[in-house]
Image (cartoon, rainbow, N blue to C red; front, top):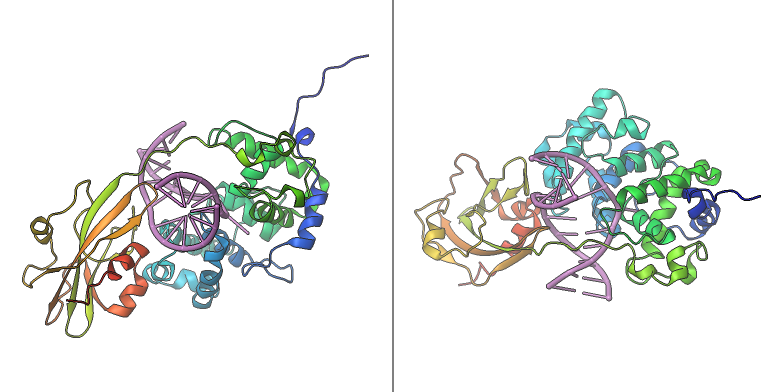
Length: 361
DNA sequence: AAGTCGGGGCC
DNA sequence: GGCCCAGACTT
């Protein structure tokens, strides 16, 4: 008696949850945003997940603590002015996260609390499919699998999926969802999600995975084939063009510096900057740059050297000009601040300009 | 499906 | 110098 083999569904490909959960109980990372008593406050889970979007655990740790000290609960965050949130976020990057965080806090307060499942969370600003599932699983115990870069890598290797990202994303998400067919995973959705993160971060790493230490060794198709370090494959990316700008550091006798607030959306949206020229494909000559200086009165002096900064899709090379006046007069769209507090509120690209030797002759 | 959106650490 | 990071949003 013969019968057709069942289609290779997720359960046929993926290993069991229990070995991973056992490994997690013994080797899980101790992280600032993980509570040791097992309690998971939605506010803390949400905040950490937003901060961790495309941002390393090491970078988030101290910023998470600092943010909590300034905005201890969601009511405090919702009540704060947006500029205060943007300033607290300075240096973390992807500033739309801070705007959305603030808008989300106000919505959640208006709702009377966080939605308690992924579908409801997904409707809030800044919360996509991944973050909704992560909060739902970790804070509310919903049996869903958040699919981040770690999970994509782990699953691509377990199933030896050779098609490149991002085209393979839906397939990997479907495979990952199959984990929740396992009762052991359903019993501990938050721990299972974080176990996948920890496995991807410490064992199933991008370059040279430590397969000998993996609780799922033997259940991994890529490891059996010896191709684990090559997965997941990725489609080639475009080269980043080089762009050029010139910025202006205007100081006065009181130590105030002239700053400008960028438009509310787009690149560095809502953040402060040193006034400057547009960023274009060709370098700026001195005369044409100075024609765009915020004030035409003082003697602008070019600062030695260039500041370079890499964005996601282009590289930027900047000149800096400096001048002093008796008293800065912030016109429309500009504001004056003491140098020290200005620097703390500026994104990294602007701090690199201030690191140029503008104090010297 | 592709582009936009930061910054830092690691190889 | 390229890759990666507990991705989201727009077009």
